[in-house]
Each structure stands twice: as structure tokens, then as C-alpha cells.
Image 1 (cartoon, rainbow, N blue to C red):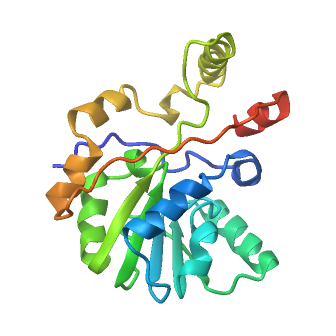
Image 2 (image 1 turned 60 degrees about the vertical axis):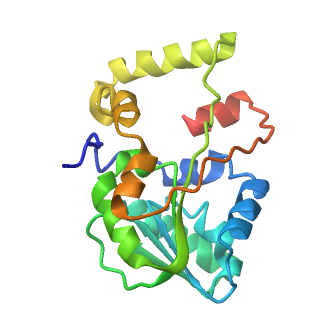
Length: 220
């Protein structure tokens, strides 16, 4: 039985341009470390699930012969496809579909999920990923604490602002209540091991981020 809380499927509806412009990229040190640990051959395929507008897929595209970028929101896929075309990147294939049911053909050297595994039916997705990954390959859950939640005055103010506007917009259902506690009860590494993966470890990377009123607003 999957213990993952159910998030709305249109969670990011209407936000693709803001998502792409204001979401901080993953640190280069994180991506390079991942590619060394696997290791990536340069001739394999990448499957990026819940890909958004391609923050992982495009950053790693030059290290794979083909990248399949999957997201359940059509708007994200359309934006990412247009961005890929404008950049002249030809080895990324965009697919609209849910990670737990989309039809894609393996094998893949690497499966990535960036800042999204908690929003997916985790066991179902992990089971599918295990079947997709080729021998010697792996899965990586990439995560960034984008606003660095903490006790600084501006962080408390942002938290208060979030709560106020969720209430004003009657949008409390955009994220299920107590989803963090569900993650604590059934950690993602436990889910992956249950699917057949060997859990290698958790690795942290740090990058300095300068926030302005514009970039904070854009991210929100």
C-alpha cells in the first residue's frame, strides 16, 4: 500500500514561465558528483520524471545520447519543448504523462526526480523505475531547500505570507495536510529499497543564493 499523500495534479498550473525563470538551478557541484558516482558513460539514456521545464533534463542533456523528460502538466512540457528548441538541443524528448502510468521504453542509465518524489505515488514510481534502470544504473532524487526555511525574520515573514494567501485564495488543498509527517513515517530511501534499489546515501551541496523582492515574488 502506497503511503504517499495525494497532491493536486494541477499543482503548478499557470506557472511555467515563472517556474522556469525564478526557480534556482541545482548546484553544478551536485550534478557533477552525481555523474561521477553512477558513473555515467556518455552513451546512455536519461529519464527525468516530474521534470518541470527541464532544470535537470537540460543540465544533463550533453552527457546522454537521449533524454526523456516526463511531466504530467501539459503546460510544463510545452514550455520545456519550446525552450529546448530555442536552445538547439536535439536529444531531449518531451512526454506529457504521470510518472506512475506514462508509457516509456527503457532501459535508462539514470532516472532522476527533482524536488518532486514526495508528490508522486512513491512506491508505484519506484517499482517502475527499478524496471526501467539498466544493470549498473541508478535513480537519483534531487532536492533543494529553495527558501532555506529557518528562524530569520524574513523567513518567518515569508511563511506568514504563504499562510495568509493560501487562506485568502481558499487554496489550502493545494498541498495535503501533514505531508511532511508522512515522509517521516515512510522515508523515501525505504521506498526505494522496497523497490529493489540499493540505497547508497544522502549527499549535501551548498550554493549561495541572493534573493530580491522580484526573485522571491517570482518564485512564489
